[in-house]
Image (cartoon, rainbow over all chains, first blue to last red):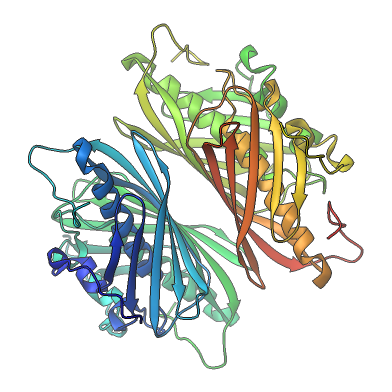
Amino acid sequence: MSDEQPIPIPDLASTLDGVIGFELLEMSGDRVRARLEVHDRVRQRFGVVHGGTYCAWAEVLASEATVCGVARRGSIAMGVSNATHFLRPVQDGVLHADGRPRHRGRSSWVWDIDFTDAGGRLCSTSRVTLAIVKAPEGGPRPLVAE
Amino acid sequence: MSDEQPIPIPDLASTLDGVIGFELLEMSGDRVRARLEVHDRVRQRFGVVHGGTYCAWAEVLASEATVCGVARRGSIAMGVSNATHFLRPVQDGVLHADGRPRHRGRSSWVWDIDFTDAGGRLCSTSRVTLAIVKAPEGGPRPLVAE
Amino acid sequence: MSDEQPIPIPDLASTLDGVIGFELLEMSGDRVRARLEVHDRVRQRFGVVHGGTYCAWAEVLASEATVCGVARRGSIAMGVSNATHFLRPVQDGVLHADGRPRHRGRSSWVWDIDFTDAGGRLCSTSRVTLAIVKAPEGGPRPLVAE
Amino acid sequence: MSDEQPIPIPDLASTLDGVIGFELLEMSGDRVRARLEVHDRVRQRFGVVHGGTYCAWAEVLASEATVCGVARRGSIAMGVSNATHFLRPVQDGVLHADGRPRHRGRSSWVWDIDFTDAGGRLCSTSRVTLAIVKAPEGGPRPLVAE
């Protein structure tokens, strides 16, 4: 992995996101990047990265990046759907996630998140749709201040 | 949860599926059912079941049930895509997964997996597509003997 | 085709739906059914029913059935996404469409529409997501009165 | 519309693609571009471009571009699935389609096709998955020679 320093995200420790254990490199309403060293808890029983790992990782990155992007207007994001393609099996090494919003509407955002291996090959790609709704009183804080 | 006894599945212990920790109730090429008592590791930081939990759970259920269904003809299943809708947020209690194949072709299978809460309300639904390919020599054994 | 009489739907004549030329058999917020005798304008150049035919047909059936279902509360439906699987190529004969809502929320509905051939075999299946929004003043009338 | 000259594609005349009536600007296994002046037959009854138009147009562009890309190795493409998001309603004017392959594997290709209006705004986006299979004896010719 590169020497780029990850952004601290202590809140995720006991969650599914803490299990995945990714390092966050960049997060805003314009872009999200993260990386992951493959380990047992993101694999299935055949030793390959679990399809659900890509889905879950895309879901948290797109959701949290949208929360960053809409916080100023007093809104939050709620996941609507997640469509993930599995293109190339990965067993070991580092995975990179790189996402950009394809649509930022008043009531919905759509992100594409690409996953590449150490050789830059596309291993999986997710399209995540989120609904934008008015934030409840007092919450929630974005994972990363924008 | 009902008293229905889960099927032992020791192989998943150190994987993402072991983290989710579902109980398997039925698995064959015709049907798959499982249940899960919601716990921290399947939630995101807002206390709600993580969208990725539904995706990952659907992925393993559809994949393993297909492996059961095609083992006799010397084939295995590989995940192609997973499209999951999130319909109702769940925070606590039991979740039920119930899946049936919608298509069982020579080269691909498509499953619909529905997730309901203790009240029987649909919380999420996944459509999982798998490719059917010739099994490599000597492998793999289905999770459940059909 | 059976002798079931189609519901007259004159409004669609000059639209893409008029090109497809399906016969509507049932439409409400609970169910939608239609049929189609395959003709050139729903095929692609290889003589097979065009994938886009299933998508477009699912889109109009789910949209219009939702419009029926939410008209009373002063709402309309707007298409959000359409995910269609192509499972079996069809060249000739009758196609049946049969759809049911999987989710009817305040802000979104999700329909599954199945397409079967004369032999009852599943040829395609669509999952259509619609947003429910307040209807503009004076409009629109449902295609079929519920 | 720009002065760019369309590529003649006479074969589509009596098909659904002929109804849509798009102009093809570029087609190969690396890229596909087309444009369309909106007309009645691509609208639904409310005067807006039919969601099915984007689906069908994406389907033919991705399929035919893949046929171009795999013809040399004696293969053809068959549509597997089409997932289209509708982002902005369009009533009039020109629509541009621009697609690139995201994955070109031995057994499947995945394309993203974006649709923009005259102002360059993203109106719809499709992800199309195709299976690559051995071509039958003597057929088919690609729509455009690569």
